[in-house]
Length: 113
Length: 111
Image (cartoon, rainbow over all chains, first blue to last red; front, side):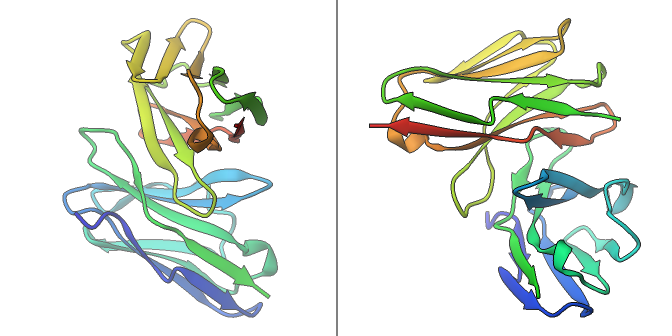
């Protein structure tokens, strides 16, 4: 089992650029979560999907953020345009709904200059 | 909205001592309470969890207790070791599936 796979591991970009973060959940997991981690705010839930359908996106900061899950094995989180305050570690996590145990990917360290 | 409060934010203990971290939650419908350990630069990893129909669970040196009436739960680590040093997060999930994390506790175990 390869675990939750995120790419890229690190992303450095300039303010105003579009950023796309990618996630492959563990095979067989039907729920997927995107979290953002900063020193100030800790682990914030941005959005989560169940069976590829967005269930709650109330944590998405603003319209610059969007997330999609076109199929059970892939999700993206997009920021357009990016701003310096978006700099954080973005984690994707997945779980099998029946087990409730959430497994995290290695995260993407985003730096917006 | 849902909220999870975690205390203390930092905790320093001597090797061999016990460490206790406490969390409270606001949504009485919450029914699942995991604890995660995050080492520097790594991903959060699940170390123990408890469901609302259980009051206490133990796994070797780690135990978690839950008081549903008071809406609080605690992590207990006994015989702490330097490798226990990390940031620990509590979390609570409501029936809608949303998992909300506490702010984290930075545990330092001094040899």
